[in-house]
Amino acid sequence: MHVSAYWFLIAGVFILIYAHDLDGALTGNVRYVVAAAFVILLYASVLIHELSHSIVARGFGLPVRRILLYPLGGVSEIEREPQTPIREFLVSAAGPVLSLLLGYASLGLTRIVSEGSIPWIVLRQLMFANFVVAIFNFLPGLPLDGGRMLRAIIWKLTGKPPLATIAAAWVGRALAIALLVAIPLRMGSALGGNLVSMAWVAVIAAFMWTGAGQAIRATKFRQRLPDLQARKLARRAISVPASTPLAEAIRQADESRARAVVVVDHDSKPIAILNEAAVMATPPQRRPWIEAGTLARSIEPELVLPADLSGMALLDAMRKAPASEYLLVEPSGQVYGVLAARDLDGVFSGV
Image (cartoon, rainbow, N blue to C red; front, side):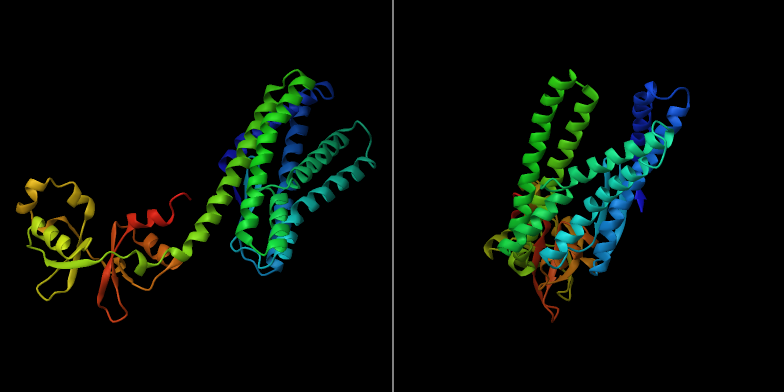
């Protein structure tokens, strides 16, 4: 489990706000103690909510990296998507269902303690809080649990997980707009304008909009992965000795209709790749007097990639060794071409 550093700040704010609300019922420092007890129990409820997601996910063989508690709630970082829409629905529903049970449990406990007592006050507030968490998470829009449940339903009906994700995300964006517009207007008319409450609504709406947008981008990213093939993106390359004037190397590349230059040693072994950015930054009048080798990056072992790499395997290899150009080779070791990192932008444009 990981707790965000901002959690402590927001928890302190919650304690002050709730202590202020208890001013009529309790006096002195007792109200701060009660407020702190409520906030701790509230986040314990959030933790239990997330644990329920994790337990169900683990039951389906899905690894859970960690549970993260942050100011607006929590998230279970499940490393893989559920294998079927039914499992997706059950993993998603586990959290809000447990929050409902916690709300009813708190309601039951209020009936066995003295009304108006400190335990009664805390339990009653905890009951309302868990009911709000459950109802809010049942809303059918990503990134909420209800959005994942909606995604599972659409997935089941259409058989298309990407379509289901994007549809549920746009419902989440619509809910965010509804929260941002309708609820503050209603609160403003009913409560005379509660600025603190309206600020929280705005934060929650922003959270929903951002989370829905991330879901849409992640889905589009996954849809583009099949087009991410090293061979398809490779630039044709020519080989020149390091002492070749830059202008001559560029002339040979243009003549061969190549878009990359590989620098080789006296045994014709690739040792460096001409850096495109450095070439573009060199004025044409200076290029006849500069050796190509001076503007080339040495080919380190991690910059040599199999030409057959594709999808996430290609991305992972590039992430391990960030560079502007990579040398692509055949299984035999023969040079196939050069992969420029900037050429990946076209694959993921609009994502």
